[in-house]
Image (cartoon, rainbow, N blue to C red; front, side, top):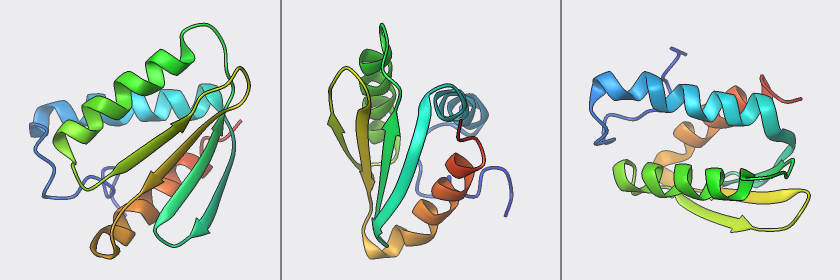
Length: 109
């Protein structure tokens, strides 16, 4: 898969901004991801190490991602540590979630 395989054509984020957004997700995963699981094929569950400003950072990224890729459903479970983040998609976007999960797992702490 290409570097941006999890960015589907239906994404409305301008093409030139997509690498920057991917870099934001990569940074979050590499800095904060402590575990991930796939409770079902259409849902990815992530645990992120907490810390000052982390929850706000995650919420900001979720909101911006929802703005360009409305097929994602994000649910955050705030807490000191870890912060839970569930990402869900519909069946038509399962491959997008697969690619995102592979990318995240490759950067896990």
